[in-house]
Length: 265
Ligand code: NAD
Image (cartoon, rainbow, N blue to C red; front, side, top):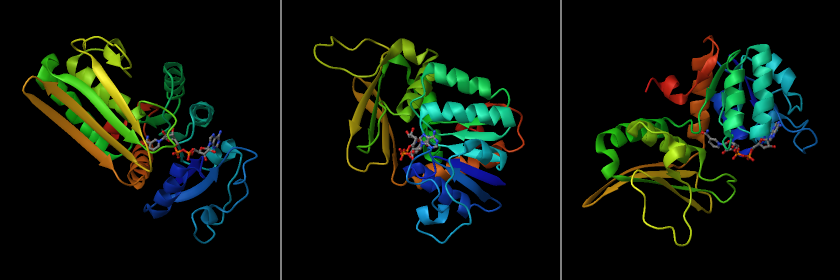
């Protein structure tokens, strides 16, 4: 299976190339970066501190889609939408890990998924997807006597907040309670906020250092507290999960799939 990586010089892009090179039956079909960046034209292997892999960073995503069975995209929302249109046009598998997509962006991704298999997940780690399933089930069992708070910490370079994964956990908790997250969420608190409304799902964000990604979902009642925690210590887990998703999506009918579909959770 030929897999291409857009945004291949990014933190995740490099991990994704390593994961493709390590995956049995997969070949790295190429990588792209934004036109005009210093990486364009450099050997893909050199980016990884390895020997040449016989291909260099290109600024032509359309050619990469044409030469690939699947493309993995961990870039930025505007780039991801352009890539989704190309996947739809050429009917290629697209795996999207980019976070920070707006509702409109997600609607455009879903539109593209009418013509190509698209796997979109705020977090491609197997552990986090298990945590999502456990969060939904726990919220359903405990009910709204238990206040739900979601705490996340990431490295200092992260630009969106709360993390896409934290929002995904919030959606899972809301689904367990059979409500819509955007009717009950509180994404930050400051000053005199008043007492906590019943049924609210709160978020707290920490940023610092090189933390890859910590998430805790708390269910706090009078007299007890349940906490479900996941800590990622290497970005390689996201890359491995994304390659697994690309292989799973190969040959599927067009549609918007999640990592929970890939794992059968
Ligand atoms: P990064 O800034 O290191 O890398 C992004 C790369 O994309 C950069 O190299 C940038 O030049 C490139 N890029 C941007 N626009 C492009 C375009 N039009 N064409 C080609 N390349 C383009 O960031 P990162 O830490 O690698 O994270 C990237 C995204 O992945 C973020 O949205 C992050 O939140 C998300 N992420 C998701 C998961 C997950 O499991 N879903 C895990 C980690 C990170």
